Image 1 (spheres, one colour):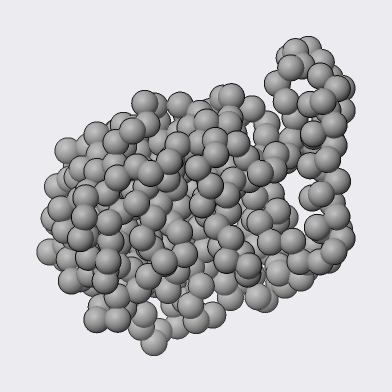
Image 2: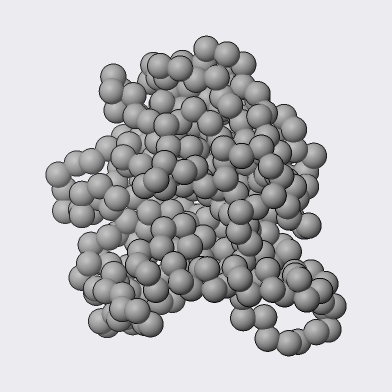
Length: 341
């Protein structure tokens, strides 16, 4: 399904799922706009009716008029906050929003800028005819020195504030920073250093105590954050480095299976998707999907095993025996190709 969002580049997309009235698909783009397609539009036109081979939608042309620029809604309820943030943005005329992320419970939104600024907003849900949220400024974080590549909120919610316990941000400055939200305020960040190039993605483990990061330096790193009872009890430390990719790593995901196995999925410029056991110290993936890099750029042969980045979520949780058989077959094909080479 194709949506007409903006004439500029789309840098980031994310969903916010709460009530139907205040859920939607959010984006930020190269003209500095933050936009929302309300979920009520998606429900009306049955976006989410997927079959095995295709998806169906009614009246798709009407969706093209439903995107709303939410910039005017940011800080609407807090004039003081608006003036406070405007000072930062006026001093940064070339800064553009390049990353947008919502917490799992929809309680806070993070926007990352191209100059390293991270701005957090809290939604204000009101009983109005306008399905679009109002926002107030929560915090402005100035810790990174280059573009924000990813913002991830901890899956653990502080019961006292109903907000994520921590927020993590990754940047082109080769660092990851962790901030505490346990008191409803941003604490001084913990810095994770180890990557030698841009950090492209990060992901929390299921209990919010560890983090995995990937980078253009072709490595994947696991960090123990020293978090106990929502607090930093020990300094964060790197506990493992995976070096199975041969080129830039673009995306990473951490999934705990029903069998309590911690799996890490990664994909990158080498056109492979690797699966790692986070509990193993071996620097070898337990499964690899895709192609190897022995072929030249001029080789146009069919590479049917290439797995795109967007397939990580599909491979993460095979739902039936057919899916499992497909994964096994693809992995066997990869291993056979390697043996032949």
